[in-house]
Length: 259
Ligand code: HEC
Ligand code: HEC
Image (cartoon, rainbow, N blue to C red):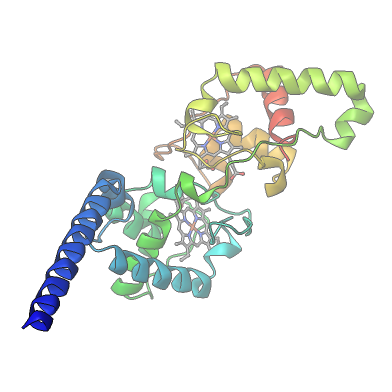
């Protein structure tokens, strides 16, 4: 009899422990940014974290197999390096700026219908499940994906030859000021400051964009990604072609110094 009561008590305390654990777990999943999770990881129920993970992992495979990285810089692992080609935009923070699953589906399956003249080919041969997984994977690339670090400021060697150390430093400082005064910082993180709509620019120089690319991208951002006219194309980053040539130059120098 004593033994029976002992077992009953043990059973009860186990149930209570499980109950508390379950409650804490539900609390945890509820505080787990439901808003951005449901928007970022579109298509997937935010109350099913295991399914999210499985789908993200599946998306990572599809991403690798489809050769997306031939054109897109991406940090496919949180801890790993950013790597990839320079034909398309970097995927840093793509999960923050592109939350609309249907937009993403169109961009993947019929990119010309989203951005006429885009250099991106259609991936219409992928199944719906594969595209869903890709969308989940893209959604996982948010600001938590880029490790917080400060840039090492290193002026381009050619510039130092032309204007000396002091001249180069003056240009970089000017570029940094223009970066703040023109609102770039509202959309771009450098170091620990800035907004996460655009790619993190802390180590922009390491992406290997040329000076000409940087200048053309600043004047009309979509122009570097399409063949032909850029009229009527919707793009998040505004054009800065109205800035003085000297200001554009300082901005390019600043961007190319962020190592
Ligand atoms: C041949 C180069 C190329 C390949 C391969 C490629 N893309 Fe792209 N992608 C681009 C270009 C150029 C753009 C910018 C113009 C546009 O939006 O279409 C772009 C834009 C995008 C965007 C919008 C990014 C943003 O920041 O707005 C997404 C999302 C995207 N691609 C997904 C993919 C996926 C997923 C794959 C692989 C299945 C892929 N791309 C393969 C060239 C490519
Ligand atoms: C409203 C938000 C917004 C503002 C403001 C903005 N950007 Fe961007 N930027 C983006 C987005 C989104 C992208 C990704 C698509 C692309 O590459 O054009 C981007 C891309 C970039 C890239 C390309 C990174 C790479 O190598 O792939 C650079 C460099 C850049 N921006 C610099 C700037 C500078 C400098 C300013 C200010 C003069 C600025 N941006 C203002 C949103 C913004």
